[in-house]
Picture 1 (cartoon, rainbow, N blue to C red):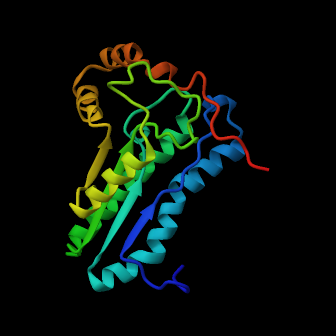
Picture 2: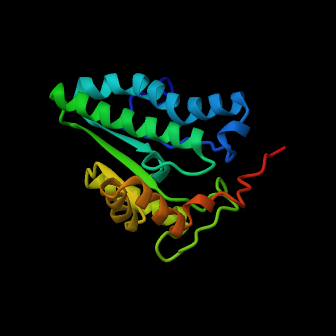
Picture 3: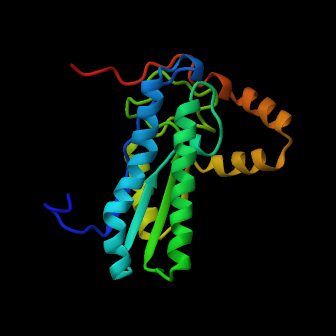
Length: 198
């Protein structure tokens, strides 16, 4: 990309894969691939494009993570770990840029719930009015708006801001009970995912 296009001013890391299996049933090769695609790719794209942004003190780093990077989810252990890492990495780079006085480099971390792209086909939500499966066009529109407004974190749907705040103040046992009531232990029960293309 650098050879064909040159330096970029907006970097959007949007690659992601999911195994959708219990950790103990996930082949090591798939766990490693999840970490490579969902986390390590961020490291390498930042290494490639951040130096030019730093030199001009201008740019925007966008990490498309997941709401599963803010809370553990049954049957998504490797995915959650990779998205927690992506969020922590993006937050840390943001702090490094501030410490270096590179205030022209902005960051946006995006943490959406399930998006209707095929990646999470079969997943069900118990309360669709509270936690709807999101349409890609809606998410894209919100991301563009967040970038334009230099919003540092975007969580979709908005109801998750409240639910994550509750998670952080309630005792763990109460959070687990509320999560179970909301159906979080069973999101992945009918997971199929996107079928492999021939």
